[in-house]
Image (cartoon, rainbow, N blue to C red):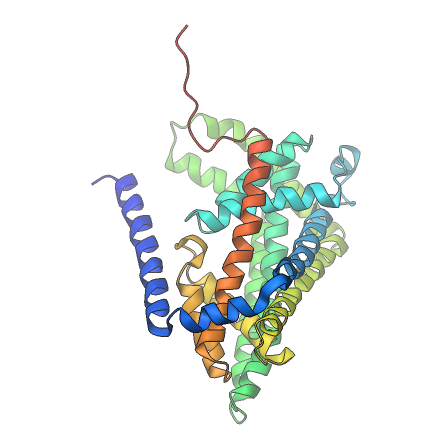
Length: 344
């Protein structure tokens, strides 16, 4: 069995595992209560898309901050100013690929660089902005999880040991963030290309990528070491996006007629992040996120039916925005299938 066949087998196995978990949770809870909750939404269903639209705008604004890089003279001279709508649609296209394919949330990043080139953004600036935005998104996600942890411990009535649990998590989070930024400041892209050249010496394309890797590292260096205001601003915008994810949960519960506090919404949204991150190999964390969401709702005293309905609504909203992203890709001329070359 070749490496490609093994990889394909693992992807199929991961997808089947996710489908099995999804089928199990629906079998355990049933469709009756979920259907009743969905029916109660009625004509208010369009409101389900409003919170995520705010998340999309915040994330796009954060990405735009990483493209500014005002301290880099080269980037400033060749800057291409994109509107918030263009950034939002480009990001939706990339996230659609991340959500629908088992690429560990990385396949969509290449798509974003591809679409940025359509707008006149050079590949090195686009790639650097994607790396920096992904880093800012990760930093803000870790900060959001740390924010939700003390509320979770409080709701679980864990008082005596809460200080060292929170302290340990905070120390790990801080160390992870510092290591992630420090790793990129040391020319991570060029080092990755060098490693690939040593591993695959006959791959001639890597020689052409060497110069571009240096340019990407230069953009990242200026972003982190020149003036960190852009990176901090990007992280703050992404953090607001995570916060509006908790607002979305509160709105969803209100629409289906389930009582839940703002604290409960914050806990569910923040604590579901590690669960989703642990299932990167499963497309969209299918099944894993549903089981995790129902489990968290149960811990907070929210009915399993309401918890599963919440996860279904989040999937439905995600599907709508994924379709928008795929539409953007097709309009940009991106093909999902290999092109046939006609014989002349």
